[in-house]
Image (cartoon, one colour):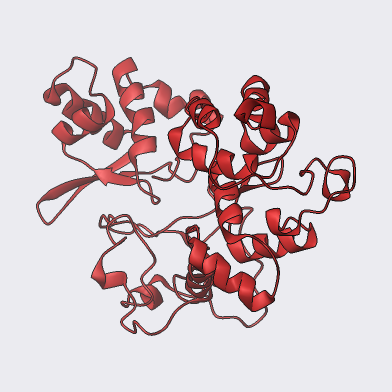
Length: 337
C-alpha cells in the first residue's frame, strides 16, 4: 500500500485544534488509511475498526466526532447508493505526493480529483487537474486531458480496486510492452541447473577433441570437489569448458605422466611416471576404509595409483596428511612384501 504523508503544519491548524483529543486522534489517523484522493469508507463502525481499533470507545462516540469534523469543514461526510463515505477536505493541504491514482470510492458533489500517474500501456506521464511542484510544464496549445479520457479497459488508471482485475487488463494478449519483453528475455537467458556429466559423455567429448584426458579421473576428481572451480569454489556451469581448461593445464592424468627426475611432470608433484597396479595391497585397502565419506574412496585410490607424494595426495584427495602418509607407505614395495 502507498504511503500517506502527514505534513507537520497539521499541528498548527486551528480547525483541528478545536476538536476533542479523541476527534483529533481520529482525524489524523484517517490520513494513512485514505486512498490517493483522500477518500475512505464513512460508516462509524468501520472507522472505529480501521482507525482506532485499540482504543475503547463506542461507535456512537465516533459518529459524533465525525459529525463535528463535518460541521467544522474538515471532512465531507456524504452518502452515495446507501453507503457512507468520507472525503478529507484538507487532503492536499497536508500532502506532498508525487503521484496519485483514481479513487475506488465515488467523489462528493462538486469535488475535483487530481491525477498523476504513468499510463499502464504507453507509460507516458498523465496529469489531470494536477497542481504543485511536481507538475509538468504545459506546452503552448496543448489540450488539458480529462479524467474521462482514461476510463476505458486499456486506459483506466490503476486503482486499488482495479489491480489484477480483467477490467483493466489489455484485451490484446499478443501485445507485450517493452518491460514485459525484457522480463521474458531475462527469463530465457536464465542459466539452467548444472548437471554433472557421465564418464561416457566426457570420454566422447575428449575423443572428439583428441586430447589425452582420462575421463574417469576427470569425473572422480570433480565429484570429490563438488564440481566447483577455483579457490573461491564457484559452482560449475559448463563441464565442457572445464575439460578445455584441463587441456590447457596439461592435467591429463596418468596417461601423460612424465618423470622429470624430481616431483613428476613439470615438477608439480604429480608423480614419478610409474603407476601402481590396479589391484591395491590389502594394507592399502584397509587404510582406505578411513577415508570419509565412503564415496570418495574410489577417487583417492585412483590418485594413489599415480604414485604421488603424501603432500600431493592430501591436497588432491582432500584428506588429512597423516592418512596420506600412511596410504603411501602401504604402497611401498617393502610394505607389500
